Image (cartoon, rainbow, N blue to C red; front, side):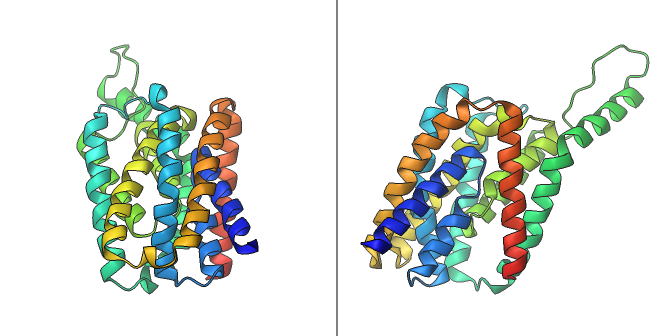
Length: 264
């Protein structure tokens, strides 16, 4: 009973974190490992458990989803679905030691980009536009990447999300921030939708090809908690000022980065 309640609470925190800006995997995965699951099985179970919360959060945000630059939502979802499936396949077929070693550095990169990416993107874009249209009086765009680059980047991030999942939402926000100059609050609804697409595709593969269903009780506890946390967290985040949301996301990123460097 104590183990069930522990996983229920961990799932609720993980679901709320994903709604707030990402990082739920870094709560769900250690909690599942602590109950005796192997790291690979726990990683797959964490992804499966977080799917309902991600989908519920996406439903809450459905009317606030805005396109990412000039890229259509359908095209972005396609990249996320294909990448999520590819990443899940890699998790089931390749050893995870080398990728685990790279995770802290990926998180550190994402944290730096989140903190400085948007102003740097705006400055680079303004400089480029001034040189290209000197004297024209045009207003420079904050975007410095095009649709093709967005889709390729999203596909790569989705592979990472399907393989490991930790902070993939933060990496999405970082990528959109530095490439398009998007505000965290503006792009957060789309992040949640794309996160749901990545997790759902990976989950379908895990349910068929892994042993994630061999331990149904831990999975069920984590799933119920994540569902509640995802719903409540999404409603809470919608009421937060942009500055508060940005602080939550950056704090989550910094804490996760430090913890994973210490773990390494």
